[in-house]
Amino acid sequence: MTVHADSNLLTDNPALYEARFPDPDRLAGRWAEDRLRRHDAGPRVLDIGCGTGRDAAHLHRAGRTVTGADLSEAMLGHARAHHRGPSYLRADLHGFDLGRAAFDSVVCLDSSLLYCHTNDQLDGFLASCRHALTPGGLLVAEMRNGAYLLGRTDLLDTPKVDAFTWQGVNYRSATNLYVDHGAQLLRRIRVWTADDGTPPVEQHSAWRLLFPQELRHFLGAHGFEVLELHDGPGPRTQPPWREGDAPGVTADGDRLHLVARLTSTP
Ligand SMILES: C[S@@+](CC[C@H](N)C(=O)[O-])C[C@H]1O[C@@H](n2cnc3c(N)ncnc32)[C@H](O)[C@@H]1O
Image (cartoon, rainbow, N blue to C red; front, side, top):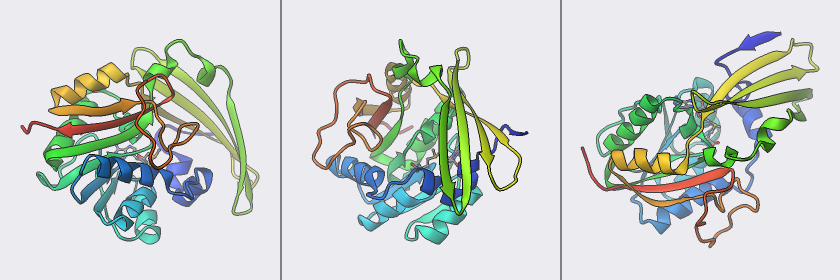
């Protein structure tokens, strides 16, 4: 068995990532565009942790001037080849400088924000967003909800097994999640097996467990006013968000949806 602490089979193989997590109706991109419109965002968008680029490209098609940024060169290469329109560049969401007031909004989808594991990384992310945004600019994010795990163990109790076929190879993944209480992380160990003769691979990753009130505090400290913070409907909720749905009022479900406005500049 090969153990990879930092690599991720899905983010290292963007085409496989899109096959595993299809979004044929571009629900995530449509949801983000709807939030931007609803809150009168200007045209310039930074999609940070943009992954394969499919949401960035949707925002581009909606008429926005989009920059997609990610740490993974594999993701960026895929985005440049398959989701043209935005410009793509490498940036670390823990701290980035793409120009002062260069954007009217920063979008951060599917828990990319939760790759800020420490408080310093969260501060770095929000300080970078503040630098990147024009006064009145928006931060739109969608992620797991740490509060969902308060009093619930359904995500932790049983290993999740998935099987799928991609390009003629049968893959199987067994995923175990556990809470690292001291670090406030949801840690994941996933073992991949494939029937193409390659040895099994064990991969480790983690998401920050962020709680709604904690997020409000971080945002306030960095000059943001929270406009929306709720558990859905959103692009990855059940039932999923549909055009015209009003934002929710609870923060109980397993996804958090955030819209915040930069009200003060450093
Ligand atoms: C779950 S994927 C989400 C991708 C995309 N936002 C989406 O919704 O499809 C998380 C992405 O965050 C990127 N990422 C992880 N850590 C990062 C960091 N420190 N800085 C920038 N991107 C990072 C990964 O490479 C990956 O593309």
